[in-house]
Image (cartoon, rainbow, N blue to C red; front, side):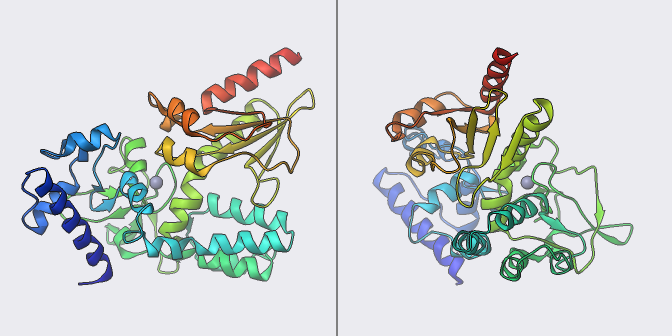
Length: 342
Ligand SMILES: [Zn+2]
């Protein structure tokens, strides 16, 4: 058994123990276990109600890929933490540390922006190695954030290799099964947000040198920033406000200069679980200086109780004027503020 299977076995054993405790028959063989994992956990016979009452719902696997809830639950467990994902996240952490120590805010900002806007490099690593703007160390780690596009992404159309990019996060989709035409992205979130993810309208020719961000980078750096870039563009283009993305290394996400000279600080937080989110965030760094600060949540996280749960559990620092709200409510707030100025 490989390391990954070991984790699966561990989970299966745990599930069996849990089932016996509640007098339920556990899955008897691997196909049955895998079938369970594709069912919403709240519907598991005899034990599903326990998950439901802990506000846990949804399947752990989606077309064979760990779902968002699976990743969330796994993060808290030592045994099932995903070492591969941890390692894959390293290049960005290295860039962050290096730029922080060397006060390279501009390199940091550009490297982060490059990753978020280039999950797919049709011409491969040469795009990075030939770009003279990069500091040598930043270039090295940026390059390591990419891998060759794996064959599981390839589809043959008229005898030529093609790929399709996820309409939401622009990562090359994977085709995990031969019989059914099922496309999956880095996890199940994109499949939930994109209606026809399995039926891409746009195909691109792919070559052996083409690269994509690793799953870890896509999951922890690129995809969570999709709603941030959308918000940034709305503020800059629709509202004509002067905004700066990532104004400092490892501080908040956007600094907005309002018409009356107030500076608003935004930190976008894309978390499935408001409980985990409340656990992870505190306040805002005071530099660069701001007058008001906002934790903004993507609209796809809006569901009854989300904001209430977060607000109840979040240990808000005293003396900081921070609000927490969803994107559309934040944009309304901006509009009202700007109207008062006219
Ligand atoms: Zn995607």
